[in-house]
Length: 500
Image (tube, rainbow, N blue to C red; front, side):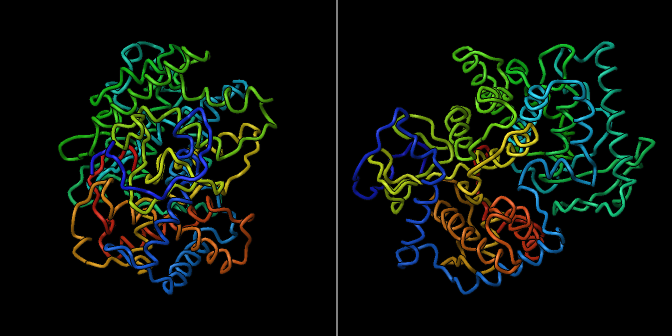
């Protein structure tokens, strides 16, 4: 089923909510839960030709997650599931490095810079493929930099400052007692060049560490940000400007991610196009509403205009803002009523319910997920909190319906395919099989979280869903996938990674 297709008939519409945004209901996390529960009920009733549920296996899954959570976080002080965990890969305090580079700036500008980094890094976090790896170095290929930064003393001074801050952060991490090798991120084993058979010796004086998958993408995007790849402002590399994003191309990203024939990374063109589209959206918003054309403008819109530090930010409102404002950037996804909706797909059992119990007559039959937008929301919580804002309504957000969380539930036997051959196929994001699997994942993650909390002896307030995911369902999904299939997910989906 192609994006923009008319959905299968949903439930009859009842009371319709009046709203200026016709897709407002689809951008609300309450609607994500409501539509996913509707699909789950249909599966429970035996209506599905794809899946059945075995809730007796939920306890086994919960024990796996609780055990891994205890191993990774013995004191149960669990951070949010966030892109910032990937910036900690290898036990390196990259946030501390960034803080050093941002020293002397006012709190609002520090917040904007952290938000800038988070947005571009999350949007670059599509699948990396099984062969790619990133070797972290103090400097990056100058071909990745904007033209005005590729030459001159400004570039050399900036790279020297970044290298010095990185060395200081690594020295602090090395001297800290008991620092784990991977800071509990569940990432792949970190190797140095030469540890692998046939690898050439390291060219640098200090051992260079390499990372794969999400950790590698996170570290690579951090290094690119620090080097000024996303800045169009001379003298200020630590920012993201619309102009730089619009000029970014696949060749620059190839240099950022160290891509070569022997080190392939899928989807370079798609990533570049996504960032270019973001640049266009940011420019249009700034022209219409004022302010700078950069992601960090979210600080001014959501917090800065309401008192800055000490203000309250509602997590659900942040998601709604991202889902609405960034909807035009998605290269795939659905159109509803002719409008870009992103990670929203038709399903015959989705119904018309919204999060407040009403029925939306405008969008029946559509089930929203907003996986990448919710991942971005989770990842932005800490930058807002570090700036002094208080985040409320955290559990309005849902679990992320992607291949690690959904794979955990499949591999643990909670979600049971009716035909094993379905796991051997390649699916599209719009296929009913995939939409159903993801909807079940959202519903069952809520149920799994309750069991995990009970096993750990904590409350929902002490361990919100964002921390259950990190503690964690995502790491457990990766762990069991590694044991069963060498890390490959149980379902193969032909996706460009821009919405799922």
